[in-house]
Image (cartoon, rainbow, N blue to C red; front, top):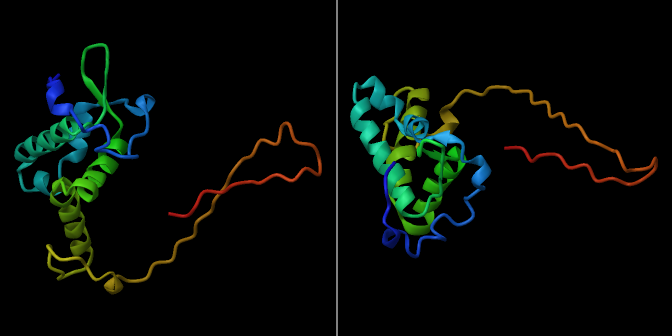
Length: 162
């Protein structure tokens, strides 16, 4: 477990804004979070170890900026993967931290460039070149109507589409 001096954490409580979920979701071991942050392109290129060092650095920078974590019985840090990903993005937009651009955007552009044959890797892809695909989505929801009488007006909420 790494120690972060309290002085380094001053004035960072709001660094992650409303990207924080809550302690009960901080259940994923640090090693798994780091593995998640490693670029698949680095693995293919035989640079896993180098990219793992970068991922450790990114996570540590987030912790210094106030990303919360819990510790398990053996002292290992536990994180919420959603807080990590959304926090990295939030730090970019709120404080200009380059982590999101350097890690996620570059990799996602490369993934899209591979989907569009011949597209350069470092530019945003032209999505209009993708072939059309048809998808069918079914949304199901169960509602408990216990406590309501026949004829009562009930607002049933559905999730918004992504």
